[in-house]
Picture 1 (cartoon, rainbow, N blue to C red):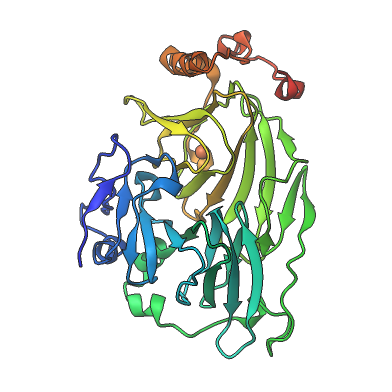
Picture 2 (cartoon, protein in one colour):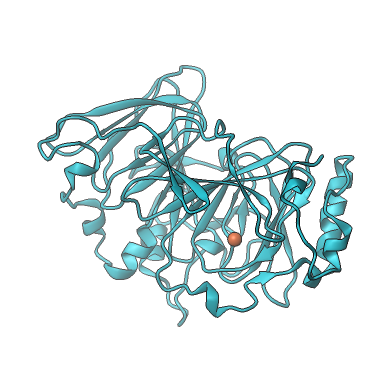
Length: 381
Ligand SMILES: [Fe+2]
């Protein structure tokens, strides 16, 4: 049954999530999307992925919602699945790797390659793991009183740009058994133990399963002027995506910047804030930020995150590969605070006032282009 694409928020525009190529033709992904019997949410952001309207999706055999935001632009696909209390949903495989973040609940994931042993592990709210390409996986809810909600990310739109045959995506047996198992014969689960590897002045955590993304507390301070915040690399071995935790302390915001499409950002802890985004010369769109919020920066739109609450704002950033992007070719990629329209600052201060808080942004930084940011500022309150 063909479905229409609906807006996830009242600011949806530009075709409400339908993707077109530069000549105005619908993409192979859009054609597939419109053939699916599941709610499809478009627009610029999702306020809370846990609250999206869901309906039974025949492909997955459970309630679901597809999120197809303006900034995904034929790069990433994301969707939410609901595993009802005490149930298991049907096994599934796809010729794409999938990253899964657990929005809510507790359960068991069972993963296996055709003809190889099954591997099971427990997950909980805030877990994050990767399903290797074409591996079967089944999700089960181990609680009887609440659903499991999982957020899935893959590169299906990008894949359909290079090969329009959906049978290749859904009926493809090719696997690399060493992605899940230590040996070619399928013996021994590939180590799920996290390890930290220094990459220059930053640390990356490598694993194929992260039990709880909220417990990482020794993060690196990014000391780039105007971009001060805490970071940790969260990486899966041999994965096309790069993912990162970003923690923005309260009553602060980062400089605006812009870049290519396909970065999904998810709020993973209780927080209060807004994301402000605008195309050059255009009106800003203000999106609420909280746990469960999803924001995908629209292609080449300026955007910035504001923490207008009393606690830190922790985000998971899932970046698709961007082989054609060249950030250095855009001299206006970073917008200094001194070039920020005063109305954007007013949005920040107005949102803070609603919470009885005031800005911790240094006043001089708005006017002095050579302002020297002190990393210790991150810890001030
Ligand atoms: Fe960004």
